[in-house]
Length: 270
Image (cartoon, rainbow, N blue to C red):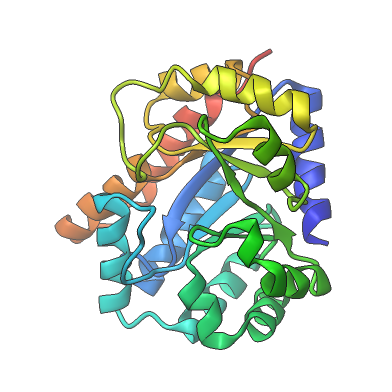
């Protein structure tokens, strides 16, 4: 089911000359109710796919903005039960693919099989474990295949062709292309290597490639779409708005919907 959802979205967008717009949020940030507002704004703003981060105390691939989002969710009492309940609620109002970004500890805590079974039952379509390379994913991969959850792994400009080919062999939903080294965050300028990395990847595989890390403005989105990305992931720029709204004690709904709408518009190439 999950792989089919991704395939439908990427195929339909390709026919229309568009890249998928994929906004990111941390589950339960700033609190469970406000998180539902966030996702509703993303969907109404025109998101094609959702990327949801599982709050973690030590998210090594995340920059300060997403780290603070994890801390807010954890402080608001986030746990496994909250996560699966929230995704179930999201599934009540949207059918677009939902990708999960997690860390190995989170999944190990419940056990691969239990985690994947619950994830599939609430409608998670793919899982990317930020700190788990393909070599270490055998057990998790088995559970994901068993429950029909798509596997996502990361490649970057530093990934040699041979390694790219190896990693792509494990992927059955989309490839996460890191636009620059380091952690997630907002950058003023976009790495010049994205186009080259995508060109190399396209020679190796025809699986969809989504670019993330450091993409924060409509100009960035347009640039990445034109460079040949099938999907564009924006996280920190949106999570910053969630943080500002939380500090002011207001709903981030309107500003997020507007922002997603503007960013989505730049994925349309025709």
